[in-house]
Image 1: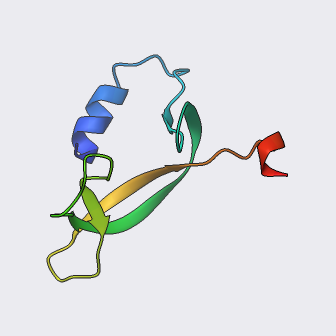
Image 2: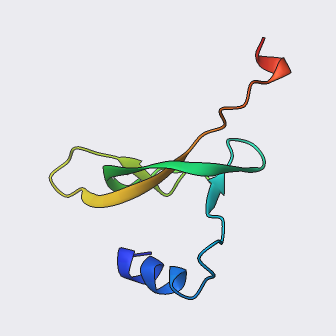
Length: 78
């Protein structure tokens, strides 16, 4: 998806619509940051990997990572 495609889609939504990203294993998180990254196709990606990987290669493309994280304290993290 390109920025133009995302903008066009977002313009069709009510302004109060919540935008989220998938959680690490389950659920959803708020978007906390838009991170500029350089990526390329990950040729040996398994089905559970992302299709792209971060790269410093000359042929890497610019992308935006919609970064989200869960900042709620969990009992299982103590």
